[in-house]
Image (cartoon, rainbow, N blue to C red; front, side, top):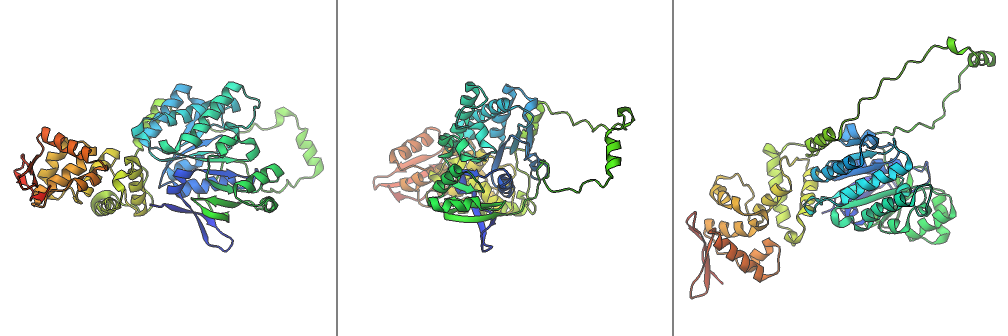
Length: 483
């Protein structure tokens, strides 16, 4: 399922979209000189996708902390925490699927690289059951994945470069989709940049950067000159999540602003030269002391921040969203039934199915309150077995019997149990294999033997080759079918 967001408009005013579902699998590289609009582009991407996917922002300049209020991102001031606390926070972020901004602006460059590396490595090392999809946005990526040695030690450079390489090369299988932005492609390590399949190229002036950008966009060298002429906020896009051919895009407006200083012109003071001279040479003791700024609020401890991350595990509601009761529950049931009817859905990893489910809920403006991955797998198994509404009284005894069945085995058991309750024909091995997500008939036979050993069912095949299934606890038997 696609999840497009509008990133801007084309030359004719038509909307240009980025498919977040595709972006999760193919990653994104943004390039542009300082002042070209890279941060504005990243902010637009983050704001538009905030309700669709978890976001983790590596922010070396503190530009994205303003996302906290309107979109619920947790801001982590990296300067206030030790290395072990940063790793622990990253682990909790993956566990609770919290969107965060790691603000590194209070650190020197070497400390920024070391902190970002430890943070990314902790995200990467999360256990398999926590491999939820997430956008990992790294601004000024050339700082963390430099193409050549700089002023930092080799040990720190290797640590940081290794973490960025893991993110871009191996992160996809762990649900981590890298979105990296850089001022100069020539300063970014090639093995990091090469893993991106989507590109948004902004204004750049150096020949080596223009030629490399043109190569990535599939343009001829003589066409590279147009990259120099791009206006601020204008980019050339290409990739499976954007367009199959290079497309010009003007990035749309954003809701939040940056903490950076404005470079707009301001009027000079209207003062005579003599008065200004006297003011500058006024004795120091006669100058009125400036009011001291209010002290900033204390930085929360790591334990307190971890508690906050756990508290916001459920994403914030978007405007117009409804809770899951009562109208939202009907929408959720319909979404699950639609997903269960899609061919090959049982062969998709559960984490991807859950992400698909949350995206559909967001599209329908409904909150799936209380449904974590485990609860989703049980509800999805019910939908596969044709049980759309689990609170319907007719399913009470059947679902009570199924409480002891693990979620990965629940769909075939419920399919058998439903046939017994409704007096329908006993499901064939092929149907059981489909809802179980396997092509192996041997696995289905072992599964049925396991159910019988637990006393959940009794399979009976008569001399005519007809098979029935019985639920001994409920005294129900299905109709016979040719085995």
